[in-house]
Length: 67
Image (cartoon, rainbow, N blue to C red; front, side, top):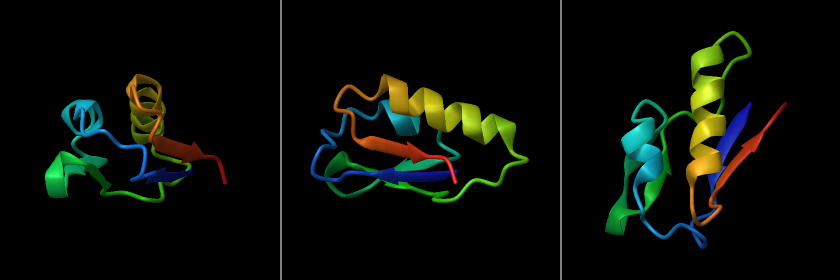
């Protein structure tokens, strides 16, 4: 699974890095930065958290793609 953020859509709400600090952190101007851009198939907790963060992003800035 690949995780990325469309910086042009990110509105710095902070929901992703507050919900999943193991995957995201607060970057410049509050916009999120991805800490784990590739998640292995065996890490189900990170998979679930990435998908949940994607769903809760009000700007639709988080991109989660299956390999």
